[in-house]
Length: 502
Figure 1 (spheres, rainbow, N blue to C red):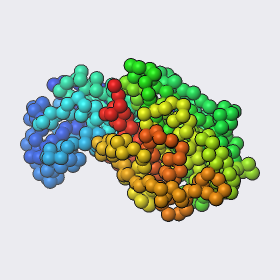
Figure 2: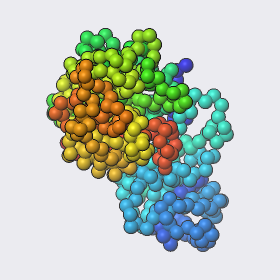
Figure 3: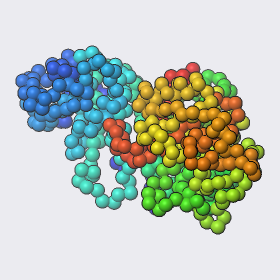
Figure 4: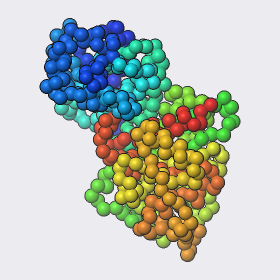
């Protein structure tokens, strides 16, 4: 069974118009304390201001950000429903992306079209408008293409949203740059949500190759090429599966100097993880279809960067394998040789992601000599114990890169928290029989996993993001109702935009 990676209903159509054009149907207006509307909105709603004031008082509406009340069949021509949403008192910066998600969440399930009056006392610029539209679209993502029967409120859904703005032209231009980011997040979410019988390693590589239509150069390495090159650690993980392993190398050359040093992103793509010979408990194992959320993020990021024609050279690399326990599977006690030439003693075959990343990281730093590398991986359950599900674990050999990731995380809401690295942890993965052990024991499990990766990056500035708590199964938020979150696409797109584009 195979279906398109597009959502069954498809993304809604987003349009823009001038505030003076009016509105009809389901309409959303923004208000601050004391029911303070922007000038154009206040003029539009003037005939029903008394009814609005009474409804606000009845609902104890104070304009708090995200709070809302509504009027059914307001006495304005063409309006079916008016929803008023609070903007806050302005003392704290407005999270426009979050507000967009809140607006979408307040719309009734039956609404097929809606008009949002993006008007405020202090004004809303084009960048903020595009952020509202981004949050609005991301909140509406749904992965439902495998449902053959849908409930009534799932069958139709919103098909078009129009944002009424002061500067229609500027809003359209800003959204054109942001729309590819929305598509990138949705691409990552869909990849994480796909069932593993559909999204095999070869199918994942094929979907990465679809980026060629955006101008991304994509190179797919099959097992023959990987074996010849010496990807011994990655191939060991996949040798118990009937599905062949793949590595996809994606290149976007957007800088003026096509030979300029690139930035690089690497993703763990374990399509399904049984744990191998060190097999996992059966309860919850179905979630291991999401053990490729890091690779999904890299593909989504490359889509976003190429869509807006980012002025930077970028390498995206993903290792796609399936970890299965058949008679050919690798075993605890095996000693394997990775692409770096270093030997690795296998302690636990469920610590497989670091083996995949080790080979891909080595390949990227050796072949492309990037300014920096960031890898993403649903690597350890230990990071959930340490940080929960609201922060990704950040490990780095470079203070500047780490600081930039931290600040960008605060700006986007995809937060990271730096964890330690050091010699005392590094010696925990020394082996009596090989150059290193694959794991360092129970204590500091996320840290020793990162120390293992650090041995495969040489002196390249590098950061490792452990997204086991954020990449899949994370709590629902104002901008995500999907099991696969697409976490990291917005973070890394903003990192590139703010610090590395020409």
